[in-house]
Length: 114
Ligand code: SF4
Ligand code: SF4
Image (cartoon, rainbow, N blue to C red; front, side, top):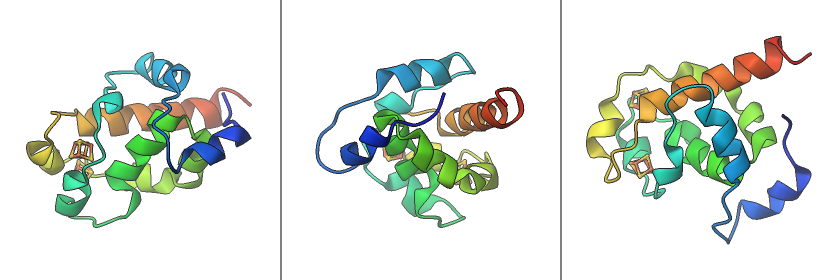
C-alpha cells in the first residue's frame, strides 16, 4: 500500500481518520494508535527527544499519511521499545507495540512488495 497524495491536506485541521490504514496495521500485530489523543506526554518523556516519536507518528497513522511515515522510517527504528512513555499515556496506548507494528509495516513494504 502506498500513501495517498490527497492525505497531505489532512495533516492540519480535521480529524478524519484513515481507518483503512489502521486496519492494515492491525493485521501486522497489536496496534491501537487510533486511541491516541495527541496530548504529547509520550514525546516529552521519551529519552530520545525526537519530534516525531511517537506522537506525530500516531497522528500520521490516524490520517493514513503513509508517505510521511515512510519519510521518517528511521525514527521508527530508533525507538528503544523501553515503554517508559506508556506510564504517562492517558489513553493507555500500547506505544511500543505500535512501534513494532509500524516496523513490521515498513519491512513488509520494502522487502515483500517490490
Ligand atoms: S518506547 Fe521508549 S524510546 Fe520508544 S517512544 Fe516510548 S519512551 Fe521513547
Ligand atoms: S501520551 Fe498517549 S494519548 Fe498522549 S500523544 Fe502519546 S500515545 Fe497519544
